[in-house]
Picture 1 (tube, helix red, strand yellow):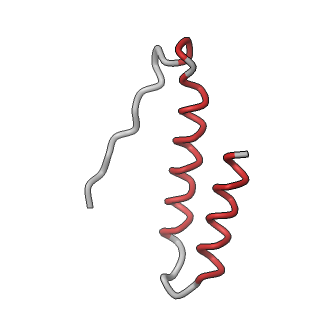
Picture 2: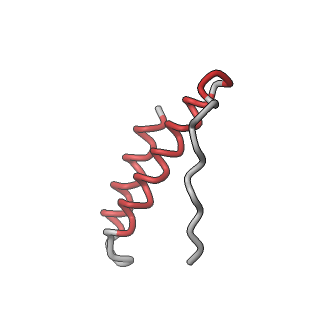
Length: 57
């Protein structure tokens, strides 16, 4: 598995970087959520997807 470092938010706020940062946080939370789910637990994965969708709204 390849780890990707999180981009720095320094200097991006003036360029509209805040929405990007919020999206990154939501995606990171989603991946943290699904790593706690069993692959056979569709309800857990659905809950993580719903949480990502709610964070995006």
